[in-house]
Image (cartoon, rainbow, N blue to C red):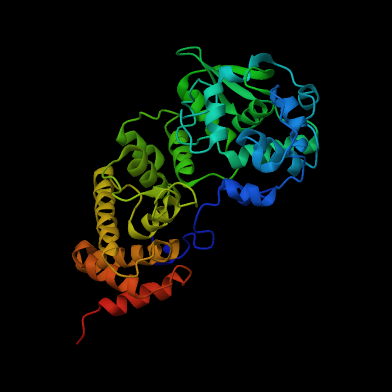
Length: 402
């Protein structure tokens, strides 16, 4: 059972996912931020030759930053971070690598056809096979830039690219090294052939291999949930809900992973009715992050060893119904600021109140959701306020007067 003390251990320092950090990743969320960091004082009269990506990169210094294409800018960023002026010979980067030579574009890297970023969209067109084994974990431009800079700075790529040849249809899908492949496609073109390690796998085996390969790097909330679930069900993303629950929820730390995967990936037992970001960006109108919602579930839902799936899923559905109603009620309040009122520590405090209310009254706190929303918004800037203080203030505000 998750006790009150256990719920105090919920993540509240790194409340929101910070995805992949390092080598100045935070500088490149927006195109204009690249403009501010890298302004080239070159000759405006020079033109960028229509050649291979490698030749283009070598000519980058001859052109003003603002007149470069998005792809040329990305190449320039990688070179600057690595402290290099020119793209090295790919043979030097891949020296010592053995395996089957395959064109980068023949390997499934990208999950989606369309991307908000122009560079990723261009690369996705050049690499037309779609990746199925990484589920929601799409290739990220920030990681492509960072990994590329690391490889060029080191002068070689130390780890081999691992690829699965899917037994069901013979397609090639990358199990480890997608961002390195995207970097190589960016720099040298998707038609470039490189040696890769290929292993025959079923689709489920390949998904399981992805989980193992990614356990050593930072991951986002949805990806962490997918990893936990897929590892439990041996890569079977279509596993029945019973298998999903009983094989995943074997300990307290996996409870929230089951919640995230079920609600977000399957829409079961109920969908969130408001937009949630899978990373810390909150872009495109997202009100909060999935990591914050996961923390809410950790505080709000009770799980005991041996608990039946039907009983837990009923609790999960009620918690989603309450959260949807809470966000809708907050929208009606003047001064509502999702960065404050749907922050991690705030949602943990609300989750604790939701849980306590149920324990004391036997009812769902949705019956007082309007009052909860009103009082939380009234508290103002509480995004960084300690969970205990917010919870105490909410409890005091909603306690009946004698």
